[in-house]
Every structure is written in structure tokens, then in C-alpha cells.
Image 1 (spheres, rainbow, N blue to C red):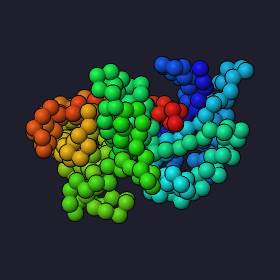
Image 2 (cartoon, rainbow, N blue to C red):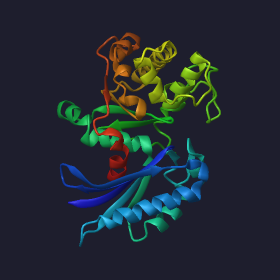
Image 3 (cartoon, rainbow, N blue to C red):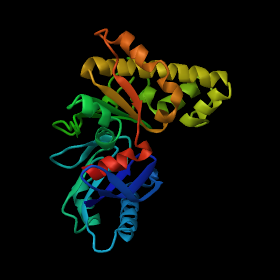
Image 4 (cartoon, one colour):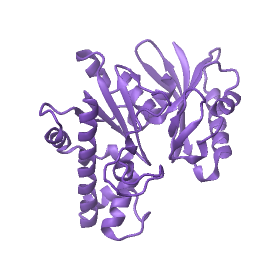
Length: 309
């Protein structure tokens, strides 16, 4: 039995959790989340992480110790320099993560960080939807995709994620979906992230309705569609077409056993309707489509995966 701490640091929220692991399962002892407030900068985010860590320590059982701390971060981190190259939370880019996290988690010898989508995919492969695949197909290939503020991806073989030489494997949100399409923060145009993220749906709704961006968040768009609003229905239809095309592209590249979706948009049942059928119709080899799952571990999968690092 071991106690581990996980952090999931995203564009909108920071979550910390204390978990107790045994050989076959885990238990969440304490969990709390706070707004990231990324516009306040890097120092502010570090203070939030430090405060959450002290709250975690207050819930550690007496005579127990923390074995490790893991952090899921919103960007690609170089495994050699420990510097984030890029990400949708610019405050982390170029910072000395090793120095700062070592100071915050003083006394902990095992501290590791990785892309938040890698953490999400890792948790789902080990304790979520991946369990049934491992029974029938050990070494299953999976693609975890977060449909949130941005669009992150984690590539899994068996129960280990692929990090890549520069820590940038799985940045599938920055493959071109629409040539010369919407501008992306990465400098390219038409990235998948600008169409299939929650933000992408908000932009779609703004374009269809003519209403200013920010008038509705992605979940509001689904609520409006359920209430019968035509603009919202059209925006979601367009979104689903983009998502299906994107997953068909990923199928032709990776030929995965399954996809698992996370983030706010993944909780909407309507996005899964007809999705596997459309992927099959667009894939190169006309065989069974990979399964597309909603995450099993909920929106805390990222913090669980971080603790597993």
C-alpha cells in the first residue's frame, strides 16, 4: 500500500488529490480543486499548487508518508530539460519546472510531471475503460483525447504512454483538420484543437449564430440544442462532423483498439451517436471501427494518472 499525490493542472482548474494505492486498486482519500486563474501568471499558479499540497498533507493518515508526487500539465514538457515547450497555458512555457516543483514538494524524492492528456490516458488504460481490453488483448493500443479548453492527446500501448523524444508525442490537437482554417495559438491555421475542443464548439456556435464569442460556453450550446434552438443544433452537427473526421484520421494513423474521450464535451451523450459507424465508413481498411468510449473515471482521471507517474 502506498500514498501518492496527484495534481491535474489545466487551463481552467487545478485539482489535487491524495490517493492510496494497493496492488489492484486505489482509493481517493482527499480531493480538492480551485480555479487556475491563469491570467494571474506563473507565480500565482505555483502558490495555488503549494496551498493545495499543504491541504493534502493535513489529510495524510498518521504515521504514513507520501511516496511520490505527480503533476499533469497543459503542454509538452521536454524530458531532458524539464521545460515546457508549448501549451494552452502560456504561464508554464519556458519555466524551470524541476527547480520550482522540487522547492514546493521539499522532502519528496519522487516527483514527476507529464502532459495532462498522457495522465488522463494512463489512468483510463490502467483503471478505466482499458481494463476490459487488456483481458482480451494485452498490449492494446489506445488514444486518449481531452475535449476541454484545448484538445490534448495521449498515446497508450498496454498501460504505458508514449512520451516522444522531446516530450511532444500525442499532440494530435495540432494536426491540421481544415487547411487554412481557424488560427491556433501554436501559429498554424486549421488545427483540430480549434474545431473539436470545447472552445472550438464555442467558436462554431458564435460563427453560426452571429453572437459574440463568450456568449455561450460549450455546455450551454448543448443545453440550447436540447431546448430546440436551431443555431445550437447546427453548431453541434458541424462539431460532430469535425470530430468524426478527426477520429477517422487518427484511426488511419494509429489503428487503435479504442479511443477514450475526456473533458467537458465528452460528457455529452449526443456526440457518440453514430460516431463509430462514421469512423468505419471513412477508414482505409473497411473493418470494425475502434470503440469510442466516454471516460469511466470521470473528470478526475487526470489527477489519478498524475499520481501514477
